[in-house]
Length: 39
Image 1 (cartoon, rainbow, N blue to C red):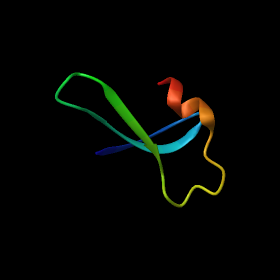
Image 2: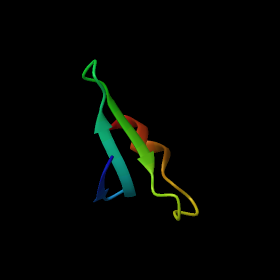
Image 3: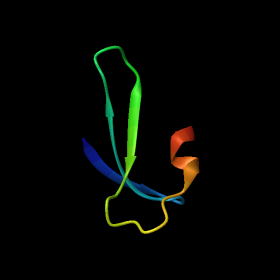
Image 4: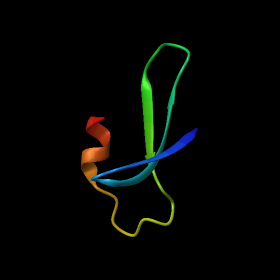
């Protein structure tokens, strides 16, 4: 997974073999934004 940041916090993202984006909030984020699921 590749780390990145946005207005909604730090996260890691990757594209799976089917072309779908998978996003996970940074493990140290105490309150990850549910908006990360909209990327």
